[in-house]
Image (cartoon, rainbow, N blue to C red; front, side):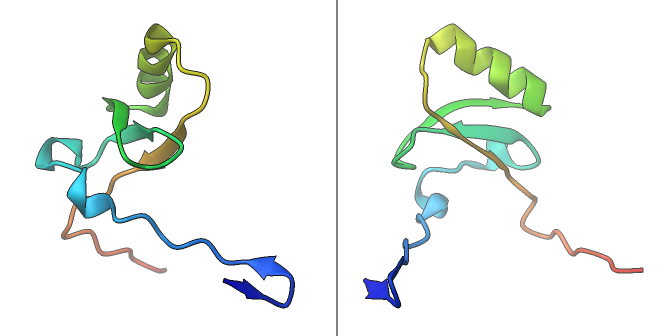
Length: 73
């Protein structure tokens, strides 16, 4: 879909590939968001795990717990 020369990308359906063990972790997805490449407690840990797979392109995402409620001060 193209609106005013801007491409709109649909949000990936992450609930189909994320598991409860991914909660509160940094996850690396394949660029098409179809596979979890690695997951770690910290971004650094997830990056190091990706390096072991020799993949060049991934997307990092912090998975929040389902009951997460941001607080604003």
